[in-house]
Image (tube, rainbow, N blue to C red; front, side, top):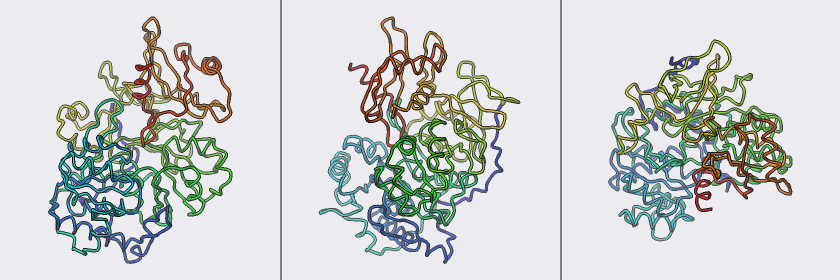
Length: 529
């Protein structure tokens, strides 16, 4: 049986993202600080931000940008990213956000697949950006360097042209606003078509259980090029007239200095940052008392780890869940839900329906009267569900069914109060002698060991061809631990079929920019070994 969100439905205006965020802004709010550059301390108020967005939209239109044209945006977090992104959308264009860590080949692949006609980048990444642009036929005059570089227009150049923003018309429900690419942890990245309505809806949905306020200062360390950072940090904060403090990349010392110095109140993180907040001694050297809420997303947060962060900082820690195809959030623990376990991803967002479906039989699993349900694949339906994958009808059909449900590929259970818990990825479950072993469960357990800084688990074949759990372990500085001790630690705490049967010590666990463990990299290393 399907189950709906326990939250009341929210109104979703039929507007483009620019008009939704800024169309009804008050004179008082125009004077509020919108963006604070974490590197320089420079502040941009809402009046200036909107003027710059309109100028960029006008400059792009003067260069022939039409409604629906795709523009690449390849940059770490900065106030300039926000201006460029919203300038593209204000002019009717579609922004394809590109991972700042990409190689020239990766950038070229996304530019070609998306059909981008121009590219924004930054000077430290210019070499790979130019190489990629040349490969796909984007001329140098259409490679705009946000912070300026010889031979290229800068963002300041576009703004200085002072061209009025064009009048554009489109259907917010069908016009693609942003084209992020799925992480590709299990295959080739795919362009995810998210409409203006998708983005507007998700801001409205998240804003009910997680009410960011105008007097909040929100630290923006999660990358804007990832849909989590784009929607939950950038757009939600701007809609609520909060102030965003931008960080180009995570550095623990700078992170702590910014949180304490700028008195940040809301901090959105991925689990690797939570791990540092829970275990690194440097945290005790900073006053983080301004932080009232930490929200973790992008990958699964272990309950004990989240509780350790909450206890150490004396703050509320929440967990959410989503994926690019969901704009990205579909579930979250609300700020007022004090009794919900951090092992949960929370309740479904407003305006959504869920199903949990047995992947073997296709049967729907009912919400239990008490306790938790049997596990099954989580399906989600709502206004935040993507339009589809760009030029990939087959992949779209595999993910979106005829009834509008998005099949997440995640195994979940639900309890009687409609709190949902992710068990694992369908494709990542280890099958040991017919038993299912969730890697995430073992990773969470390993992280409770005081001498283990990080861990990842995959299935590998033993001499008999049986798939067995193997742990990749990162030790705390100065720690001494043997493989046998790691295996014994796990064996004492799990069922026999879940035991870790191989251990390898490594320096770092490979992770995506969003904090997801890159199991494919670990598997590739196994294959080479």
